[in-house]
Image (cartoon, rainbow, N blue to C red; front, side, top):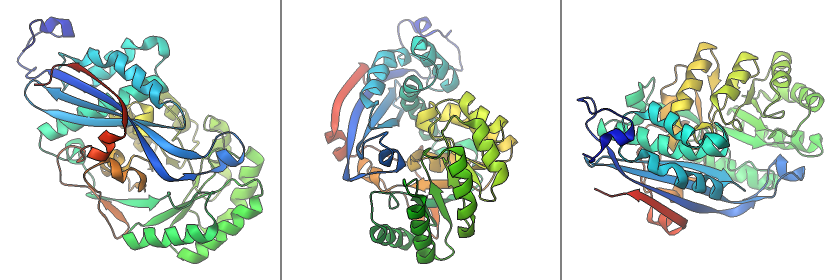
Length: 389
């Protein structure tokens, strides 16, 4: 035990049986095989995406238990997340790794001057996810089972083959490859300056896949009038949902749209707190809520959003991060969706299995992944605190 356990803010007691001894954070950049564009690029608001920044947190305890978690950022913010994580990592040393909710609060207050959402909580997410991974590993259970699973597999859809930077023939080829892998649905990016181009692409994909579930994603680039008009025309394609038709913070606009359209409305991926998701839920803004665990601050706040969504009987389809969200969606009461991306597969030693339209919850303890040597080779900065057991 540490010489001064009271320094961690805890009294010594029988319930505390282990302490965090060592924390390592690393900033890793994943290069994409080709630059990709969605509607945000076509409107001139962002540049094509060429790489993804990952913030990894690795935690080990005095008794030899370990956990790994990650957060991420696209285009900007990765170095900022790493800098904040480096500032607050020392707050975990000497703490009981089981006290995850209290530690989340402690880390938030350690950086309170930069707020309780956005980059600060995205940095905290990597630690929070690592602590949940550690807890499930110590219990020798997959995280889904630790949380209380409703299912051992989750419906999955593919997005990485449907970007606007790809000509429609390439989109169809990638869709075919995804379906042959066993993926169960497709999401297509929309939001072209000319909506008729989008309609032609949707029609081409619908004809290509038949009755396979199809969703579209405008990445917040429509105004209310365009979203309503386009949504009404697109209803003929039997869409599973229309994603981010409006600005992420337009709660009232999404609510009006959801009330008017037959196609379900989905949004939430860009929000970075429980409170922001609560506004979506409170305003009846969505049919599918799409929180992103690293963006909202980790698994601890994500579980709060899940509880709120379940109370309102909403559908759940988290954004990205299939390695994490597979376990969380498996623990949701209503049949959810998880998003499949091939991009991150090089980062981990393990691969997730897809079969008959569903992603299989692995039987490995914790989240079930470990960092690959390739990922470590892509690290641009590493920081350690404490002493490795």
